[in-house]
Structures are given as structure tokens and as C-alpha cells.
Length: 115
Image 1 (cartoon, rainbow, N blue to C red):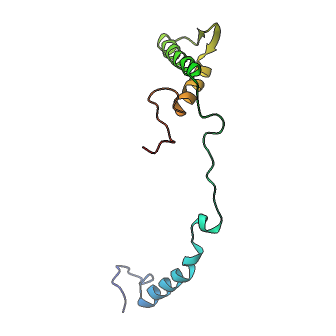
Image 2: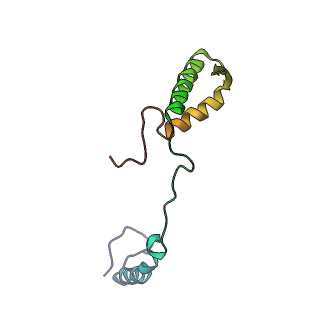
Image 3: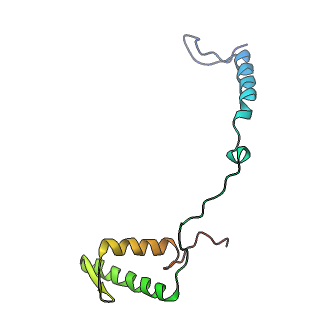
């Protein structure tokens, strides 16, 4: 018995024998597909590497940096003064994005919370 498949050459007809051979092959090959954790223990890597906290003074600095950075972008400047130091926009962008990614600045999204 063959399945009805519209093919004028009848070169790709699905037969019961073909389905049986395919099912047997999938049962034989199925044990080769396993989870990685069943082969060897996988230890999760801590992310991010390094310090994962910021103290009160560091948070104040990051908050001031973010506000100065926003004002600098609105004015179209390439650098600004903060605490007697000249900070360029690209460095400030890196520091602010790092602080946001680690939850030091609002919206305080932390990847380690289970809430």
C-alpha cells in the first residue's frame, strides 16, 4: 500500500516499509542524543566576573556620572567635568552601561534575584 502523494514520476512514494525503516533507525540512534549534563557535570560560570557590588559613595558617583552624561549628550558636547576630572562621552557611556547592567543605577534590574 502506498500513500497518495501527487508526484508524476512516483520517485518519492512513502511506503509502509520506508516508515518502518525510519522508525527503527530513529530508535537505534535515539540514545546518541542525550543531555550534556548526563555525560559530565557542568558547573555554571558566575557572571559577571569580578565585583558585583557598589558601595554608597560609588553609587553617588555613578548617579552623578549618569546625570552629567545625559546633560552632555543633550548639549552635544564630547566631554564634561566631574569632580575635577575630564571625562569623555565614550568612557562615560561604558561606565554608565556597566553600572546599569549590574543594577547599580535605576531601574535596578538584577539577574540574581528570584522574585
